[in-house]
Image 1 (tube, rainbow, N blue to C red):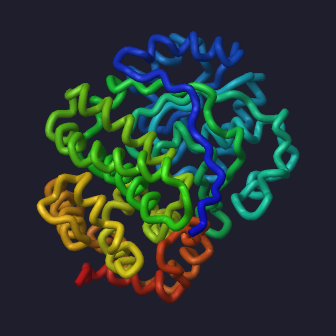
Image 2 (cartoon, rainbow, N blue to C red):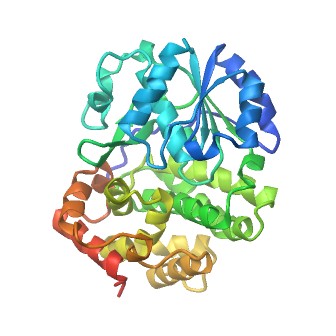
Length: 382
């Protein structure tokens, strides 16, 4: 057995209700005097954004799409440089956090963004002295981007999502305030919450030696199972919201071990069809589970026990996933969220190139991923 691995853990997290008030202290701690607050267009006029801007005396950049693009990063970088800002407040869901981290990365770089794609040692091209500090303030409990060292950005030239990576992209301080998530609609709460579960599940199943990540992944799955239904049923349940924020961060910590076929497919689907990332993952999960069953079946007993299921086997976990999605009104097929099979071969090829494919428990190629994609469009899980 291989018992060798490289392990990294996250940053400072200030967790709890009301902690947005400490945003000025977070900026001060990181030496940020002239922050640029980056968020997505949908949050631009929200009261919590206005309060964050007032608290931190930040300038606002809100030109970020639901699937952030290279142009969004370029536009944010121009705003950053024009305003002579010395730090970034990443405020919002995963899209805003990813864009903000990429903007901070690019502050003092002389290469284009795509030169830093997470391939080989590309991260060594980054001039670390040209990066700015980041305070991350998540407003959804899903991606865990607040504790991640990468951003997922769509290259509009080829309609592919690229993972931009550098170890120092990790935000310096995270303000994890559940009060900022209470207004999230139930369907978005559900989709982002299952995204957190998928992060934990794929990390647990990924090959390699990382028992610390696996332990975090298991607890993250338990938290989602217990707390997501409560958060969906009552968006003002601060305890459930707080625990879901923790689960989201735990998922991103855990997936340092790896991801897999769900994300390998979700990235090109999001780039081509502009689907919501968390929802896409939620739809895809059982189809990828079935494909991976030979490699993961022996490991599902522990997952079943952690989830408190009546049987400790693969079938129990699979049946629970289907029931959990249904209870949270997650669509069963990709077709239901506007995805057809017309570009199936292209999606398969793009998914094969995605870095997440390398962490899949069963080796996958374009043909295998295309097959899973077609089943997810049609709803074939048997």
